[in-house]
Image (tube, rainbow, N blue to C red; front, side, top):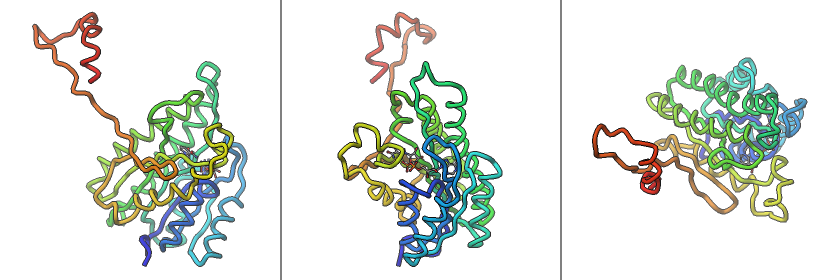
Length: 280
Ligand code: NAI
C-alpha cells in the first residue's frame, strides 16, 4: 500500500532537481504522475520537452505511471493545459505541487524590470494560475484535494541579491495563506514548502560547496506528507526542510502596546520611546 494509491499528482518543474525527486517518490507511493517541465535554463531561457519526458520515462521504467507535459506555468493557457493533461491521461486530478522556478539574481540597485517581471511571472503568477485551474477542477470533482506551493527562506526572511525572487516567494506565502482560508470549505488543503537543497539552482552558492547532506531526497518526504491523507487537517502552514532539519516558518504578530491616554493616537516621539515594547 502506498500513501498515494489511486491519486493523480501534478508536479510543475519536475524535469530535474527537487521536482524530479517529488515525482519519483509520489510515483513510488502509488500516484499517477503528470511530470511538467518547460525544460529551460536556470534563468528561464529556452525550452526542451525532453526534460519532462526523461523523468516520465524513468518513472515508467521503475514500474510507475506517468505522463509528461512541457507547458509553461507562467501563462494562463499553459497552466490550463498542465491541469488538462492530467484529466486527459487519468480522468481526474487530486494533488498539485507548484515547484517550477527560475533565478535572475542581481542586487536591488542593478535589477532591471524584465528581471523582476520574469521571476514574478514564473513563481508568483505561475503559482496563482496553476492553482486556480487546479482548484476549479477539484471543486468540480467535489472530493477535496491538496495543493503545495514552494516558497523559500529568501521570501520568508529576505536575501542579498534576490529582490525579485524574494518578492515572488513572499507573495507565494500570502497566496498560500489566502488560498488555505478560501478553499477550506472545499476540503482543499494548501500548504507551502521552503526547501534548501543542492540543485542546479543552488550548486554554485558557497554554503552548498562540499556538502552531500542537503539533497532533494531530504525534501520530498515533506512534500509527500503535505499531499497525503496524513495532512488532511493541516492547511496554511510553511514546512521548511534543510537536510535532516525539519522546521517551520510563521509570521508572528507582537502583542504590542496600547496608548491608554487621550484619544489613543500615538505621536512619532512616543513610538520612538516605546519601540522595544512595540516589537515584543
Ligand atoms: P531546478 O532549476 O532544478 O528546478 C526548477 C525546474 O522548474 C526546472 O527544471 C525548470 O526547467 C522548471 N521551470 C522553470 N520555469 C518553468 C515554467 N515556466 N514552467 C514549467 N517549468 C518551469 O531548481 P530546484 O532547486 O529544484 O527548485 C525547485 C523549487 O524549489 C523552485 O521553486 C525553487 O525556487 C525552490 N527552492 C529551491 C531551493 C534550493 O535550495 N534548491 C531553495 C528555496 C526554494
